[in-house]
Image (cartoon, rainbow, N blue to C red; front, side):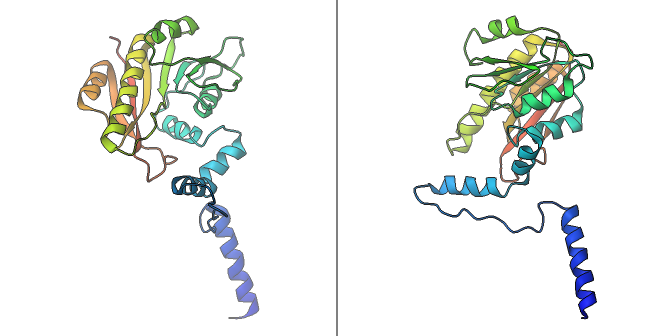
Length: 244
């Protein structure tokens, strides 16, 4: 092979890599694992080599999870301009940021489009009202209604319980959170509204799925590309709320 052919081949390779970011690049290794558990080391390694982590940082999103909601909404199209959104389990705020971007009114008002709720502290997001609250508390639905400033078009739940490593226990905990989110959604959603919630692989429990199908026009499961392939998480998307 001549020198000219080598240079030409090299340029083609560079162009191919530029068109496919994240592919063909060397993985970064965690430099030291001293005083760090194996699980922490593995998590850090995934973070360093996750293209969505870098993309979130570049786009100004607080978490890579923002791209999950972007991809879910790109598929189902429920975040509309002027639509009021309730975001459950909102911290650190990636889903809240996307919700504000996609639903903010053409003509700005002082009334937030998004109500973000979490039991943990969360930094302000322009265009959203942040409320520190445990949605599992008995009085949570009553308190949440006091913060609503428009017909609720979407209820989002990316809530997750701490993983135990026991598949059945983890699944039951996530389903319980989904049930809580659904009960609230059915209480506050306007007709035609949408409920989106995280569940685990295997989908939604039969009784819960049947309840959704009674009250929504369509119920589907969807795994966004931004959800890691080795993660058991999947999302249930219930659209066209019929009312109770």
